[in-house]
Image 1 (cartoon, rainbow, N blue to C red):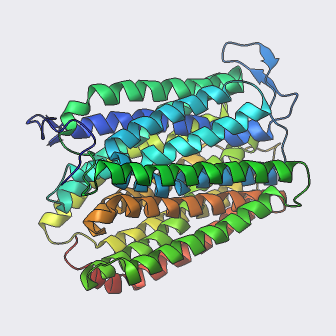
Image 2 (cartoon, rainbow, N blue to C red):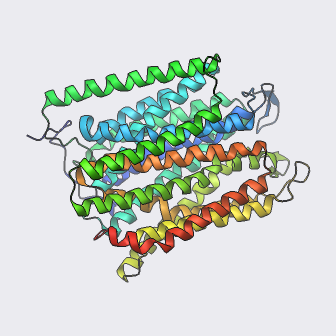
Image 3 (cartoon, rainbow, N blue to C red):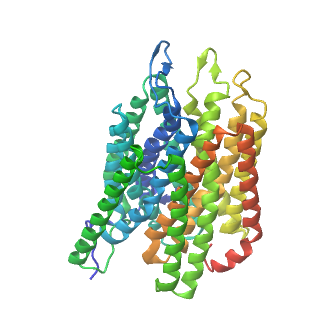
Length: 513
């Protein structure tokens, strides 16, 4: 008998619409908006805080100076920590998807995850090194529960699939970026201008607002996100005990490992740990796909589509390894080599992190309408082609910033327009790849593995984030221009390959459009 771990009497799809889409999309839109407010607000401060001197002085927007101590880490160490944090946020999307598929349902997983995220931000508001890292750990765990499952629920609102689902994901993506735009402005104003920890706390307030909105809007979701399982309550309870026992055992082992590294018993640097984790992620994902192909019990057609998901996983990892320079090397470039003085007032460097989300807000409806318009004329590019175009857009942006940074020095700062143009091109690339990828995973995945495959999608993002941190750490030995040019050439080459082989993967995806 089917077990649904929520109120089965919840209404199934109200008649009201949200900009021509199911009304439940508004609930998920604003939930994700506030979660991204908290995530990107904190991320905008992260590497700036870690590299700020322990005797750092902040100048507030209203004048006056005050002590605003950072951690005083070198760029390589700070970038490796940044990469590990952003990678682990997405790696935990895989167990987060499993919990939703097998134990809780997506709806409960999103709420519990949001509560843990808020607790993590408030923990970081306490100014100690221990609470800083504890807060990062809580945010990692909470985001692993929330992030993949809110996207899965969006897909459930569109059982018909097709271009309308793509348009819905593009609108949902605009909500993500509305939060990502507001977050750095708020936390940057408080964190850089007054106290870093005020900014971290403000991110937690945003997550609490998202949780309140999520609970109030739950009736609009119909049956989306409720647990559907043939297992008995006893079997679900047994799985829960095994999973959480194993999970907390792994957490304890990680804490012990970190302690042994910190006291020198295990001789590893943060950078080396990040590199080993990267190899571990690749092995883990490859093993998972081999298992699914050989012993997953899927049809030949399903296995072909799973093969397409693996290819998209590799492409998205490359994309995020470049795109996530925004929070690391590009963020530092904005701080160190960009003229931020306007009429005597110095803008917080973290505010540049709001440029890309602002472009998303402006362009997401345009791209969403464009996909529908092209679909009606049978001219919509295939999913693999869109991925290749996205990578080329990202590459063009890095060529621009490499050019702009070629002659920049602390005594000869460059115009903010270089970063603005770069982020515009990155935005065009992002809109061709990221929301389309979210939609594609929900369409390509076998029904009983949607949550897990969405988790794999975010593990691809994790791998990209991890490499992004390692690449940014090379600023210890490379000039900004050289780093950005290397990224541009690598990403561009992969984009060209993606377009050239796209017919093969278009055939494998079958009837999915």
